[in-house]
Image 1 (cartoon, rainbow, N blue to C red):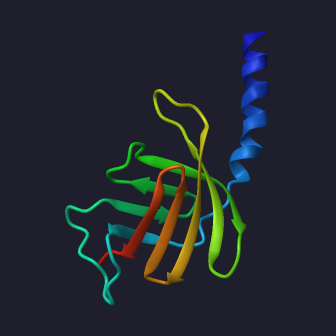
Image 2 (cartoon, rainbow, N blue to C red):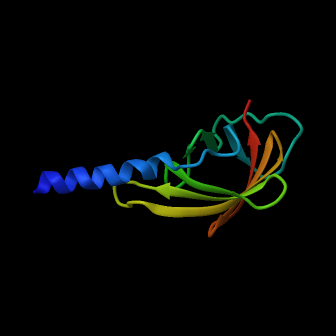
Length: 122
């Protein structure tokens, strides 16, 4: 009976994973206090990387996120919900707004957590 329940749960979870959105941006971005015209040297900086439906954070409280939804919220602006799963947290949500000023400069407004300026790494 336990095996049947486990199979049913896993089968139901598969479509949910397939529904994850991809991020509207791709690449490694360093957290900066102000934007410059050229890519930033990210050595020693907090780096947030977007890759498909996964996001990593080198110095944040949670190292890895999986995207759940991306909703357009204006010109080059999106409302994003990520899923957080760690050893202590299971399937919690992280909500934020992502705005692309251009291909190399992003603004990430975390709810809660505040705003971060992100600039593409060298």
